[in-house]
Length: 311
Image (cartoon, rainbow, N blue to C red; front, side, top):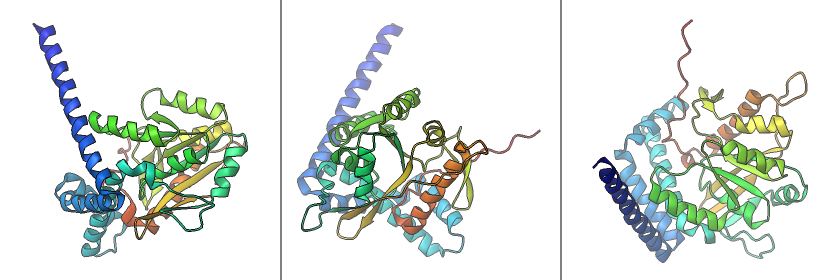
């Protein structure tokens, strides 16, 4: 009886996921039908309308107030709304990722995407050495992985799959068709990431989310926990570490920027200091966020430092 009930639940679960996948594909199909500009505008409008009613909105407001203590309440709320708009645009742009990245260095007229530092991309591709990229949830953060794939840079992008299995499945289909190597953030992912660097490939990862077992860094004037894995790999492989960000421009355009390699702090024995490396990367991200705060993911509970243990 118990086995039969378990099987029925499993069947229902699979059926529900199939229905959800169909719904998500239907929504994405409609977005493709109306084109990237209109679907992005629709996504922004929906997110700005629905976002303020979600619990994450309170998180966003609290984060903005803490990061900008002198900002007026009116401006705090306007910034939170703008951030919802960016998130809605980004979500609605997923069905168009393949056509969204149209950068061509030889084109006579600029396209939807411009890239600062494409020469560095090419140099990294051809130097035969491993390399690390860090990024953040800014503008449409999926574009750098597409750029790497289009320009033949052997790279593995580490991503966190959405909680909803139907959405995760459809997004994985889209990412697989537009990007190079993909590695889900999960148990055992570190081995795959290490393997990529060992064969001289490149590793890209977003570093602006809370990581419970991480190292403490200062971010926007407050302590935050960050995953130390990129610092550990930088120490182990002593390879260049670059920041890459996306800026959302007017008229549905984007700019990708690649930083020069960071000069990371080292221990007295000359090896890269992991905590110092993560602070250096986080400080770069802070500069990006302060430059375009409306394009960052304020809704995430970024600042969750555990209380110090009592002795």
